[in-house]
Length: 114
Image 1 (cartoon, helix red, strand yellow):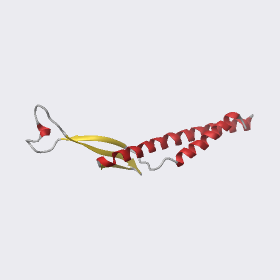
Image 2 (cartoon, rainbow, N blue to C red; image 1 turned 30 degrees about the vertical axis):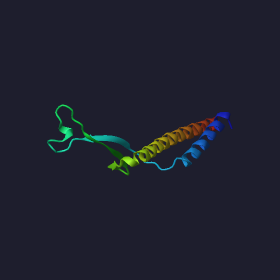
Image 3 (cartoon, rainbow, N blue to C red; image 1 turned 90 degrees about the vertical axis):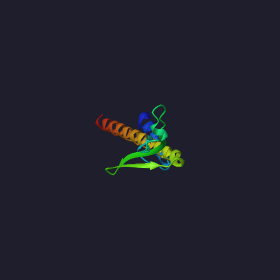
């Protein structure tokens, strides 16, 4: 077994360990929304200094072929950001794992030929 193959296998083991520690995750994008209401005399319609209502937080994601948008309460924004970060880390780690697996398969195939 080559040194390179051992290094790749070790990295895959570390990736698996990192995946176990990720915690809750969710896909999507969190956005901050501001809006204008329907009251003619509201501060949001001031001609000189309009001040929209908000921020309101919204998460949008697709899962299982369905797109979803949900409002997020302000007190849950940090939790949702953590979940989004965990999901991004999950995607990055699994992509690296697949890339390493393909390299290992190619190296083994070359070793069998030669």
